[in-house]
Length: 172
Image (cartoon, rainbow, N blue to C red; front, side, top):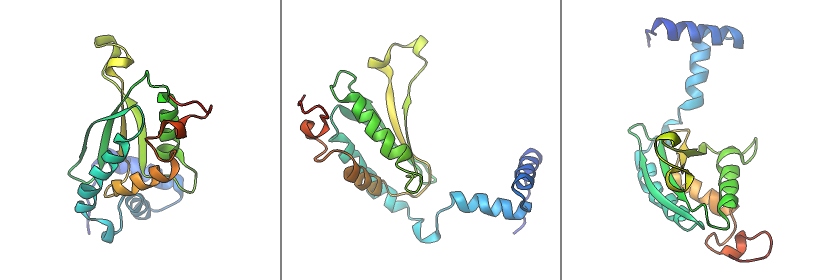
């Protein structure tokens, strides 16, 4: 396969390849392999079927309201959440989701990111009204149901039971 690369992209890739001690061809293959799922995992229906399962699980988390969810044409997906900042476990929920979704371990890193999102605060208002959170896949064709299962296995159980979230032994 012949591939014409735009000049700036080619120069950037050549520099990266040189720094990595690889040929341009080997470097491009390594980059593509790191972001392209195996052919047997390229199934759009996995994302379509799994997203409602992740939404249903997240809807059970204390203080969380799912605002929206969707997938892109190239099979990445996202879930946008609202977190009740007045809920007694709000920041524990952020901490738990951040740990599992962003950095569970060096060997088990999930292909997801959990982060806050907001319109410009100077144009709108404070976090109670305009701060939202998003979970995004960083790898396409990843099954959102697998992410729900991982969360269910790592978050307090049952996830909707406030007593399981309370590290001080007091319920909300």
